[in-house]
Amino acid sequence: MKIYQANIVPLNADIIGSAAHGSALFVVNGDQLVVTIEMFDTPANQQHWEHFHGFPDGQTAQIATAAQDVNHDGFVDLPETEPVSGTTMVPFNDTPETMDIPNDAYPVADANGYFAYTKIVPLKQLDAEFKKAFHDSDLELDKRVIYIHGVANSLDLPATVAGEVANYDAHVTLPIAVGKINAVTLD
Image (cartoon, rainbow, N blue to C red; front, side, top):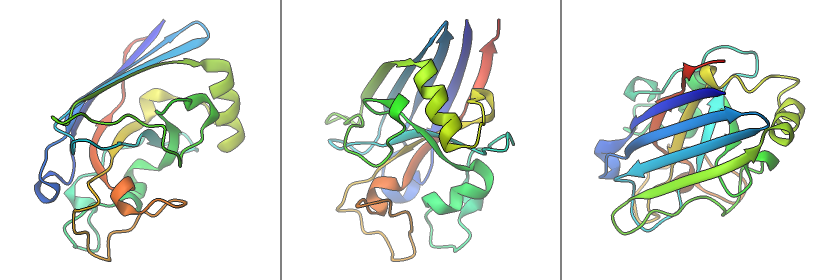
């Protein structure tokens, strides 16, 4: 069994009006990956995309901070995270093993901004899709970071905030929290 965890800290908190935080636990047990994510103080009553990000070449990803706001608009948007965190890799939605990122199958926060997510993921299928998408790369969870995304559509975002994916605008993809995934125990 291999166990990984992340302490998820706020990103963009001052400008979105909430300091989203929480934790993630990843347990590799045989041919399964059990993912547990618990979040507090996220924007309420809305869906939150969540993924791990990283570099296909095996470089260790780091969390984005306010320093990544290269256009100085006050927001660290999705493209600004890429130099330190890499690309979006695995979604934590209804079917992570399919690696279908742009969809409406992510957790929804309650009226208090709380949500909990637990999913048992078939590791062989996830690994095969991951290798197909990222040129034979391995999951290497301890080289990844987790992002939680999503703000209310009513939040006024400047035109400089980028991050449109498929039919989803920057309100859906704006990072609100991030955590470095670390190995806890390795067998």
